[in-house]
Length: 138
View 1 (cartoon, rainbow, N blue to C red):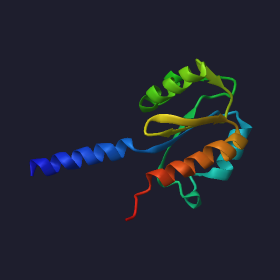
View 2: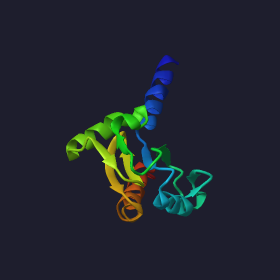
View 3: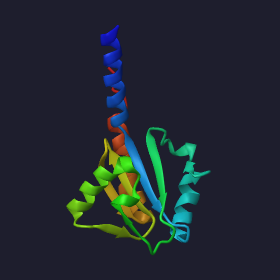
């Protein structure tokens, strides 16, 4: 019985870590953010028609598009991956909204600024990550 419980805990923790998460950085005064939200969100959550059920969706509102967004502005669970990605790109903080980062297993796979970049870079990468994480059929 103890080994079964241990196996379930390992499986659960691995499944919890093996996730796809979209970080969306918005601002109250960002017209482009409202446009993106109108197209992709319903009641501040992804529209059901998008089939993002396998994606954890996180929003950070930085107040104004003039504000900068740094690692410490991100939710605590995303900070390690974001810090690594920002360090690799030589950035201490970012400016401009909407800004998106796609995390796969805690690491930033791709990040981009703007609605067009979401559609051409983030969304295709998110679909690919969801296919990777889909249960394999035998």
